[in-house]
Image (cartoon, rainbow, N blue to C red; front, side):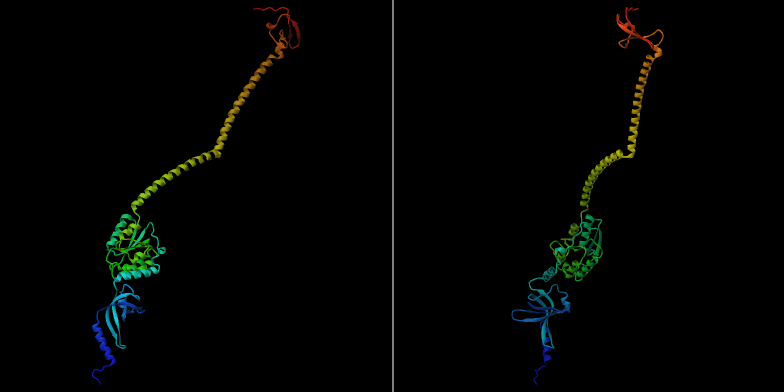
Length: 397
């Protein structure tokens, strides 16, 4: 037997030692030929160029740190080392880090998640909830000692100080930030708030990355309470901005966008009060006029008024009756007097006074002075009537 002869296991062991010692911390560029995310959490894939390919694996511990997912046809750079599986004499590239070729990892992860959530309907305007016009209770999901929270509270005090504020102290940066933000949002959603604002100040893409995580997007999408995303500066557009019901360019701007200005409300209330006072004054005037008119109608129609009117009419009639009676009485009195005079005048006893007679001419009583000579006249008393002729008439005066 030759001294150079060795077993298959020995050969594979030496190859393993040689390859793993030679190809440590190696970076390889290639196109993804296939990719499988296993239920165990491990990633199995292969990369190729125009002439050959190599199998690769990434264990779950490294996969969980990836910001994006690899897909077939993607041009990537893998970092890791060559490992050999001696029982089968197979080797593969054991990957610890993957980056997109010619593109930032975070930028690719951002675009991938954005497209995936868009396809799921997370960004649809139809599902977005309206922000209440007047807010009485608000939850602020932010770091308690952050400048962003301080700025928001300052604007609240200036614009709408009667607002009831709940502060959800939350980690907003780092590996655990996204999960903590999601938990804080879910808890705030149970408090009966009018609106929830999640925010932080500006920073690098890495600093703001927690708001680009899918777990935060899922939490915002599931919210029943309207959510405002107020993260970074105006140039920073994050996944939370797309999913939320309202995107604010900064935390301070969020407060100015959703809270009314107390001074403007006061001015508006003053104008409304003046208009209201004028309208009420006009209505009261009209009502008072109508009331007076109705009161007058009521008084004219009231039984007591009718009784008073009837009483006054009765008094007038009574007075008038008394005047008429007095007038009639006076007339009758005068008639009685005249009749009395006539009666006395024609009283037979008076007319038949001895030595006296009534002188008549043509049926009318006349004085002796009215007799004319050679004219016939009549002398008449109660018993006798004599026709006589005036022969001569003598006056004594």
